[in-house]
Amino acid sequence: MDDHQHQALTEKEILMTDHMPILEPRPPLPPFTRDTAIQKVRLAEDAWNSRDPEKVALAYTPDSRWRNRAEFASGRPQIVAFLTRKWARELDYRLIKELMGAFERQSHCRALCLRVA
Image (cartoon, rainbow, N blue to C red):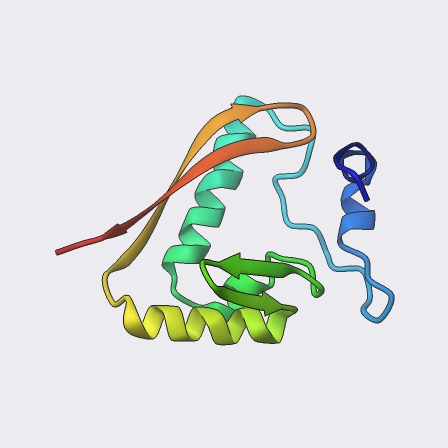
């Protein structure tokens, strides 16, 4: 699927898989205003900083694929395992997300990971 086809998918189609029911989308939902885009970014930041791998994994589709340097994770169980290992090592991990731009159907943000000394 190319980028154009991916952008054409609806929120419902993105959350659907062949083997899992449709997940309930969490507000705020598109179309975004500046305020709701900021709210969505803050909710994602708060979820990551909760350091709850199960909670974070639920924000991604069941068939998500991740790459972190040389490590690959495919599907929620592997994402949960990856985050559990990551946060066991990185005790002072903190994610800061910042809205870079907002459009009607999506928001763009920048993530910065900090280690607090």
